[in-house]
Image (spheres, rainbow, N blue to C red):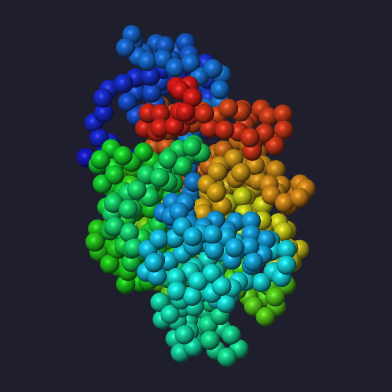
Length: 563
């Protein structure tokens, strides 16, 4: 059986033991505009059946109803990360952490220590993630294969930059993937070359993504284990819903393996999260095959569904691969890279739109954003105006571009946490005039553009508090001293929490079933130890802890048994 809620069909949930619970004495922020605050709510099975005053709530219960005193604590809808890479993040837990490395030498040292516990011999890759050359205290250069060869000449090694758009491999890895002077030239700017034409070990964008997919070798049991490990980490941060780009990080980009594994966990009663898969297919034939197999927008259940097709259009600003309309101010020899030709992007968007499926397009630079807006405009003409096509990141913009986003009713999936790093280099990359109209989340909200919050994890940790802090303060978290970046883009706490709950549900077409605390909606909520709406200092945001996470009406994280 299916219902029609939130704009897309959903399968009814499995039968549950009937159970009703009254939660009272709470500071409940519902994120519902008509009734923003309540002190009591009733959960019946897996949905809210009443939200309001305690006296009224008690008229809705009976002697068999369980009761929970919330102790005046803040309750909000569970967080929903609108764009991350869940499988990649879960994999990262077993990889060498290179975050914070202050030199190429430290990378080599950390990877060398990682090699000591490496298993599987020369057949297994040693992988490290998270370095950023802008934080090096010596020469701010990319590592090369020669640096990694100091670690091992036999074990293939890959290290990826924090943005995951650039990686470096050693000579053993080059041999394993068949990349040499003769084959490198066919990949153009995606492969770094030495003056003699030999690869220097640097690989970028879609070549790197393809390589990561090809070196993955998981069976279904291993994939299940990764999902369950990552799910536990999400619960600790109050997250129970995600929109995730996972297909490139599964064996041979196998979306059937990915989706069937999530569905099996659901059938086994082990899946305690809601996945909206942003299916990254990459090519027209792959898209056509996907839709011909019966997949499409809304395929699935309340816990596992397809919410969009995902497309990579450019790179990152830090790596100077984001596609700009003008050359980089600090590197005039480049304007960044496009991962897809404009005519190919038009066709990918056309096919997805024709099947009623939104696209979620990675576009950071203004050139890339301009191209996706052109593609959306093409399919809007005479077509379905209600399909919620989205721009992921949407960082470098000017005012006319924002007005186009508004006019085309495109949505944005943004990451305020990015300013923690980007404030150090954005102006030098694009110049003061353009940066002044970029990272424009407050402007977007004021214009009525639907903007949702995510982290792009593992690029950033999937910690909502760090994201919220950057959104409401426009200040850095790391580095020495507090600085304010683009103060006009500060959002209110209400706007930030709404962007992390209702707007993320809107981005996946599910605002009718989740994203706020209201009668009839799924009972997904979190209890926090600080009142985010009444803080003595914004610094308290970073100290705020999740006390309990409730999914489908059941506590999935409650270490101190407060519920």
